Length: 566
Ligand code: ADP
Ligand code: MG
Image 1 (tube, rainbow, N blue to C red):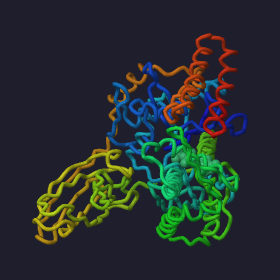
Image 2: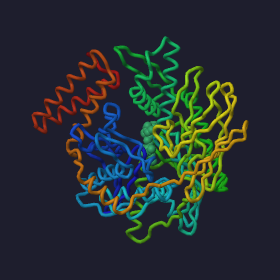
Image 3: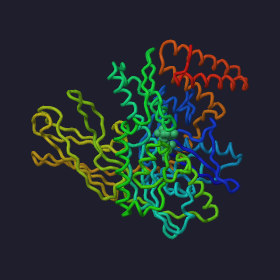
Image 4: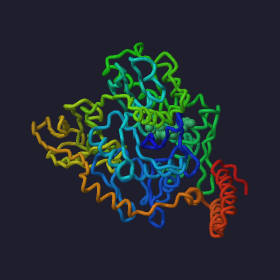
């Protein structure tokens, strides 16, 4: 059986080609999307998906997400007493999808087509193949995500030629690709994007709005203490506003409730800066591909965040027409990967030209943000943005932070996260500067990145004319066959959380999280629900467990929606 898999940064899903039809696969919780989150449960067994996502907050040292951003690098993360590479974490997600498919179809999965972002470098593509191999899947082919979207829409059948734009707004990334179909070959003509722009950033904008309103009205104790609860609530409100005119943003903490009604009409203003940022990569991709909006035959919206009416309206106004949205945006890529798999079986696979002469990562330095007297360290300042065509050379200027500072330390990072702690450290330099009042000595940081993946960092102090240089040879971190074999043995030794217990584990993890988010009487209530469910579990009576799970899930929903009555 041939399958197609969308291995996403936020969510993953799989589809199969069965009896001439495309079929999306549901997971152990009966859902199509499996969050790309991996963790270890309290017994050290691997937990993938929604239950792991609940535990991101309650068990941060045993859980990890967003690892797709580290594919093709030597990055590792510690979960419990084990270190994992991005390929291994991706392999665990793939393995979980593979089990779901085999369960749904009753036959073993032999081959898979997996999608990757168009800008993925050779190392990142190799890492994705390794992930498949580690999951016990033969990766027949990788397909570019925008190409997969085009296949899902059947654009390869609409004639020999065409030009398309794929607008993909996911959980944390925005990717724009211009595709050209020519004599039956699909080429990514240009791809541009923003690594810091996705559903999560819209959530953050909504949180900022809520917090500023609450502050104006007398204040929240400390919004930073409720980050997780605020994030969940923002996502819920944002999604609700896709269908309703108003929704209420509520934070319950310390036996108090803060709430604010948000009207759909207010979103334009709340999201204005983000909506503006969506324009730039579109313009860049069109410019790079030397294509005018009028020349585009189709515009496809994919990625869960394009479900937002506001984003759809923006796209319609930018392109002067309504984009195609007839396929669920978070399902299109998996469907397209499956179409490719099916075509491949008939030896009719769509050929693709892959674009790899770009710098695949953002390269930058650590900076300090000053808020008055307060200095906040650990922020990332990109110097070369990912996805620019190489060779490339870019300069950023920074200045001293303290009076009479004599030395400036630079740490160079690769990665896409706002905070340097989540990026990969490549090197370190110390540059002497003449003592002057704070801010009076400027330094030019020039990065030059070439086709061989060699980064040259050069720092100049214009005041003294001094220059300092550091050359970093980027080790892309591709595993050797021996290392793959070792990792395979290590992964096989891991115990996987039993599939049939996943719905129960998810509920327990959710109750743990609700317990952490609440206080006082509500906590007692949640703890009581947890104890009831634990008791049901101990009975080992499946019917009793199922009915307890249903009942307690409804109560948890009510608690979460603020509809709980004591
Ligand atoms: P990725 O490609 O990053 O793995 P997805 O395409 O699954 O991710 O998109 C995930 C994002 O889509 C999340 O930020 C989520 O909040 C958002 N999303 C999903 N459904 C909706 C909806 N109905 N309204 C608004 N945003 C949504
Ligand atoms: Mg995606």
